[in-house]
Length: 407
Image (cartoon, rainbow, N blue to C red):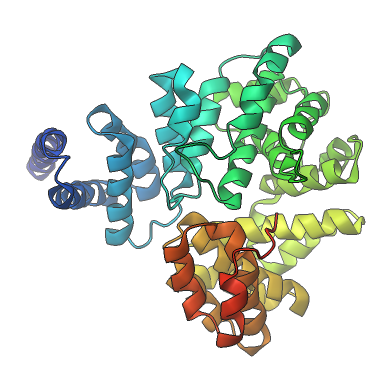
């Protein structure tokens, strides 16, 4: 008992020290070098504190956003980067960034567009901050159609380049995905209407089309509920999506694209099955439509990759056990997941391809080269590092800025 009391005292002392450091952070924030040092020290505290919790990732998600009370959002992400340096198992920080975005916009809802543009330039945490700002601004209440129509222009322009924001194609895709979440809320889970709004705001006059990522956000909001209001949305649905009703639920939508995206986003209902190659194949062959199967595999393999960033060998084993064509795509998706989560992680992406084996190595490198323009855009520094690490025959393709974007 005495040992426990001493431990609690030390925790309180450490927390007091942290508060003092954060106050100092504000005073010296103009000094970049010292600011980085304080970010490192602050991260050390969080790593120490959260290591004592059953779920260190969940601990970061709950506690790190509190830094917003004393430091600007840019410095919070500096701390997150330092946490990931010290805790190498913590790679997937999308939920943490989402929480930060929600807390940030709660203080000034009217400034949601400008706040969204504070997303880290390297898109660390896979643009979770953008999602958080968008959802935090609009998730509170259902809106009548005329009010949605009134904000439609704002929704359509928010993800587009602005004077102080130069998003990559990946940034824009993730932004429109967040819009999909919002549309589920504001339409009161009127899914067909939410999908129709995606097609209005995410299809551009120049031919660019981000509607699929928006639609995936619409369905993801239903299939991955987190808060009580999420479950209230599900309660409104005439057919509830379950393992047994997924095909029926998705089969009611008008177009192949809608049905396909809906079914793919239903993966959480089969979460445990997707930990093996056999489970992935069983899930995606539940429906016979080839386009739906293709999208299903891509979604399932992406989820497997994103949840394996701290231990890529786990998903690599799934990739190796799939038929060759699927295995090639699986390794490419796994490698790409690292730079989608954090564009500085090119070496980790290349390492996945290097260790993939003869059957998959070349296609894996090719996958990274094909998506370089989409992922990095004008980020020539991180793009250059990745391209230079690829086989010589792919370096030019990787570095060409006019290479096609892939959605």
